[in-house]
Length: 190
Image (cartoon, rainbow, N blue to C red):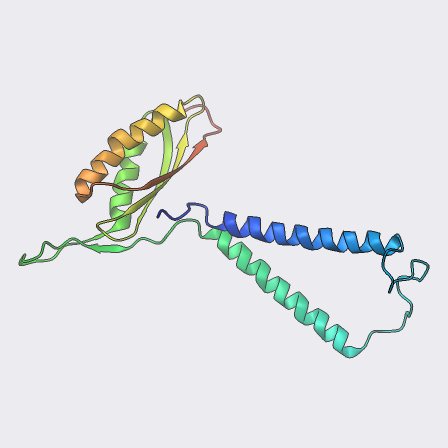
């Protein structure tokens, strides 16, 4: 199974859905209280019956709650920064061979990125290979020039670049996830 290129998106959607449901429930509670549908709430009472300072434990609970929310926000920001899986080192040694061969997946990914950047339709490529050496997964972020036929470019990448990578790594299938971006600058210098 291929891991998602944009892993934080799942967490973002879940967090936003949870906040939305919480706000919806709070709004429904407020409307029900205002309408007099809650037997334990008198709609004519003031919102804050007492204006004196709250007990100390309330202030401590608020501070702890604020710290927890702050730490969760920091975790969310950290998740936004880490978008691609980390490179791994593959052991490509042939059984029974006298020596050994290791290859960092980042080396193979950089070679593929350089190959793809030679295409005239592409401005930049970020490539990442992850997973075991006999079942690698490829994640690509391709920045193309405006007006590029993305469908044709995708076919070319899969038919040429990924095919050469499969041949070099001697694997039959490489699952690929691609994200395409269009370059805002229309001129190219080469």
